[in-house]
Image (cartoon, rainbow, N blue to C red):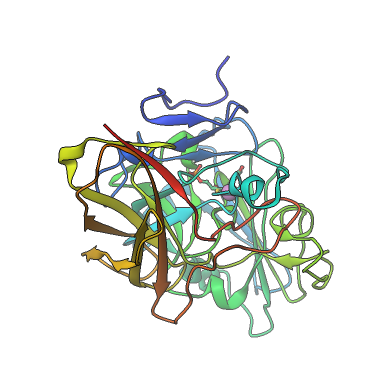
Length: 350
Ligand SMILES: Nc1nc2c(c(=O)[nH]1)N[C@H]1C(S)=C(S)[C@@H](COP(=O)(O)O)O[C@H]1N2
Ligand SMILES: [Mo]
């Protein structure tokens, strides 16, 4: 039996071999918004089936005045906010550690397609925390899921209170699809996808710092260049770094008459300021960034190109408004997160 609901045909997705992890083919995503059908999927468990009638969201812990339970219709009746944001998996690009270090980092060997951009509608997390009487002393907010593993990941209260941190009920105008977290998921804008907990059941609010498997064992940068952080053995992943990619398969296939290189760039909570592009080791040229360009969402970019038939190597490098730029390479981490170094993308021109 399938572990998921959505159709994952090979013209749209690359199967990462677990039955629950599928990266999008960027060559199949021409638009700014990725439809629900084409949105990448990354789940640690099969998709749970949740009855919205019986479902309750529980908010509890030492950081609130009164334990609060909300039904699906109560959550839907609260003021709704709609924003466009990108979700990118912290493991996106993991495959490139192999090229850089000769050894595979542990985990699914994602190329560049564990990323998507959608319009999310839901309730601000801070509104729900305020309903529960959030205290001055609250320091950590930990959303937890109703899936087989009870996936949960804490965030600091400051992130939880931001106006673009949502409890999402709708994706691209439709009821949140089962695989993407129905009945409700978190949107932690600009942070690793792992912070965007799906199939939400509980939100624990605490005065102390909270930990879970997903910020001590997984989603932590460990290796020779990292040191422990609190109870975590390395650096906990929060915001995503600056990255860029081509709207092409691996290797890319272009026809000579296409005359245009297209791609995406993303800068976590920030905005992309510039994308540079280099072909076959020649000079770096600035690509045209297409609107819209808003915080927390990818941008599309393009660059005219009149290629000769054959195989070419294309490199891209993005920089954001804070001056963060993609490095040539990134330090090794054991689980292969956040590979955002410049990559050499082979492109075959027919
Ligand atoms: N409950 C739960 N939430 C989860 C996950 C999960 O396995 N279980 N995966 C996380 C990870 S690692 C990512 S990258 C995103 C992926 O979101 P998507 O499957 O909607 O694309 O969901 C996050 N939320
Ligand atoms: Mo992820």
